[in-house]
Length: 117
Image (cartoon, rainbow, N blue to C red):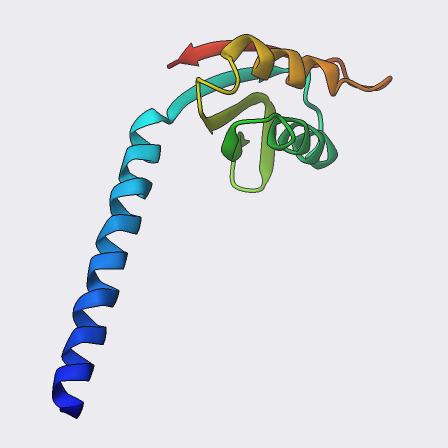
């Protein structure tokens, strides 16, 4: 009897896992990734500001900001890019660009444009 209960619990939990994975897969199919070129960044604080601004946009699921390198030790903030994964039903590329440009400070004015969608 105990084996039957264990088997029932195991099968039930596997079925629930599959249902959860199907929902996760459907959600991932809706997501879109866009790469933005960001001009005007000069330091690590700029990276933090832009990443935070993009992360607060509704529908954004992940943000990865990368900067280029000059030589072995120096970062090239003139070659900054943000890879943003978002739900196009909740936000748009224009809203992402607006979020980046709105994060500008008195010291740094950011401009964003789409590299690839």
